[in-house]
Each structure stands twice: as C-alpha cells, then as structure tokens.
Length: 107
Image (cartoon, rainbow, N blue to C red):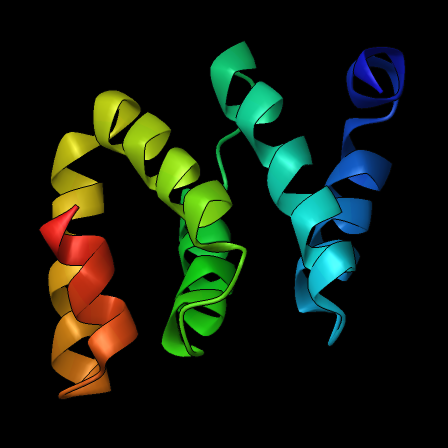
C-alpha cells in the first residue's frame, strides 16, 4: 500500500474515498485503516474532505468502527488541533442529541 500511496497519490485518495463511502462496514474499516498512514506521512492536505467522511460515519450508531474512527480523530487532533476541535464542535451541533457523536467527543 505504501508504494501505491507514494506513486499514485490521487488514485490512492480516490480509493480511500470509495472505501469510506461504502455501505459495508468492513469496507469502511479498510478505508479508515488506510487513512492513518496517509495522515502520518504528512502528505495529506484535504482534511475537510476527510472530516466530511468521518462525520457521516460518526453519525451512525456506535459500531465496531468506533475504535478506528477514534484513532483517526486522535491523529488529526495532534496534527491539526484547532481544525479538529472545530470539526467536533460543528459535528455535535449539527447532529443534535446524537449519542454516538457525544461518545467521540467524550473520548
């Protein structure tokens, strides 16, 4: 995957987007697991798009994906703390009394 990510970054991002947009949770997990190395590489700049994808996944009921999503939020909080705090606040505000969103914010 690292070679694909490095040699074809646009295709890699497109594939991650497809994985995160899937209705299948196991496919979402593949996308979530592909995001962390990308963030850690320092070569990822489309954080707003990632926030949009995460917000969709976070609004669902607490699923087996919660640990994967939380891991990405933690990496984002280290790399872009202000943007991540804003994202979490906006997501909570737009989701209302969503227990799943509240869980992520408490963590």
